[in-house]
Image (cartoon, rainbow, N blue to C red):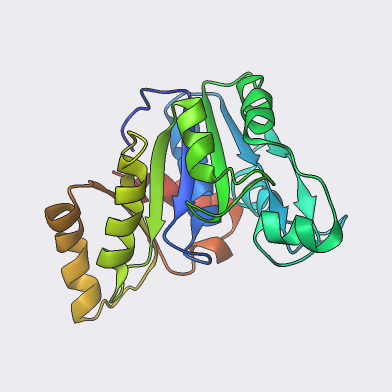
Length: 222
């Protein structure tokens, strides 16, 4: 992965369950191997009860990371705003999240979103896109490699462009035996969207041991 020009890197996806957490873990390892002090932040974790392991724990298990932060947790398996409204809970504002993230002492702070770019993180309509813009962050967009992904990537990139942001694309959960669409998309993503293809994470990467993951992860990223 190319060296960051910003201290903040926001990891988002074209949808839920595209592999954001595993890609975030791979980025953490790659930056650490490059000699950077890395922190990982999950602004909003939903669908996990108190005391249960969430996405941050997955990253710890895969990488051994110690500078990790979960800012908000909501029990219901919904988007953060929906989960909060359903139970009358309060949520930090985008400004609150940005303040907490800026206070972290690290060379690179990886911020893993919930769902896609425009999922609401607070009760005022603020989204991960707003948080990325507030931080002046680089954006890594995690996408599926199969049919339909070109449209999903293009739509997300257009939403980022509306606030002056761009993204690198990483394909999550890539097949070892790609079909026609999957193989074509690997070439067509940079050609048709203008966004560089910055990595391909293999299917099953999240099931590796920590030693295996740390050994292989830097090679998945360009």
